[in-house]
Amino acid sequence: MATQISFGGDMGNRWASGGLSGTRDVFRALHSGLTVDLIATPVHELKTCTPHELISDVLQHNPEDFDFLPVVDETHRFAGMFHAAAHRGRRTLGTVWQCYVPLSEDYLLGADASILEFVLDADEKQCRLVISGTKVVGLVSLSDLQRLPVRAALFALITGLEMTMADLIRMRYPESQHWMRVLTSGRQAKIEEERKKAKSDDGYVDTLLFTQFCDKREILTRELAEPEGRALSATLESIEALRNSVAHANEYASSPAEAKNVCKIARELLHLTDHFQDQLSATGLAK
Image 1 (cartoon, rainbow, N blue to C red):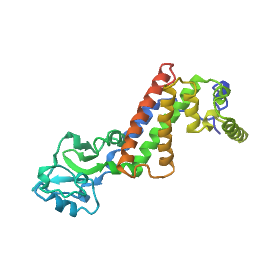
Image 2 (image 1 turned 90 degrees about the vertical axis):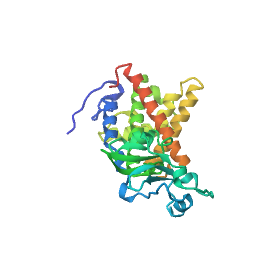
Image 3 (image 1 turned 60 degrees about the vertical axis):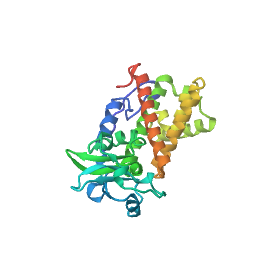
Image 4 (image 1 turned 30 degrees about the horizontal axis):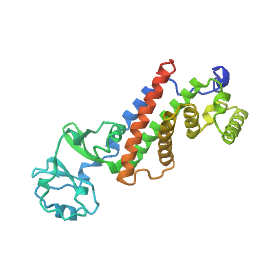
């Protein structure tokens, strides 16, 4: 039998605690466990080329249309990266040696780096060799953003934001009837229906938990002055669209342009979460 804890006001008679305790630490730990080695193509599966190969030959023997190919020297050591996509569809003369980019830190990423770390700048660093110790063990690229572990990382990030949004609403509106007035009559009726059903099943937790992402967006942006309110609403709408695609197993990064947009949204999402957490910290409601 669950122990009931009284929080007072609208949040009384709740049997499960919310997400206020250690939110930043919890999500930091979660993302540190989702590492790039989970999405990397293993080194033995990599398609490579050499500096002295003709660009036309490399493209012809690249039926998978990989955007980037690692360049290896005569001793099979990794020497750099060849951007094959930049030459696709052209009659490019010359050899790989004339245009490949020598290996540098920008093209390296530790196998234990978080997936989130890769996502946040994958639009700028679209291909990275994954290293463990002193060895290359794989490769990750922008096209890997739709892999299952990336979906998990993105959904956790969005969930963290939504939990923080809920905590911020609780801070601004201690009583549920205050934030309920912001929503349409249809949404109010649906939320009230869900609340009554949960209460009848002895599972009543908190009215705010029956809101959707769009409800929280509406509550947090309705009273903001323009253009701040419009800008925040637009950002949250793009995050919500990504959330729906991730949650419903839809494609969200099926082209380079869409994948780059995911990186942009992820940065905005992280910035917003930190911004909202700072507001909560100022009141002592977040850790």
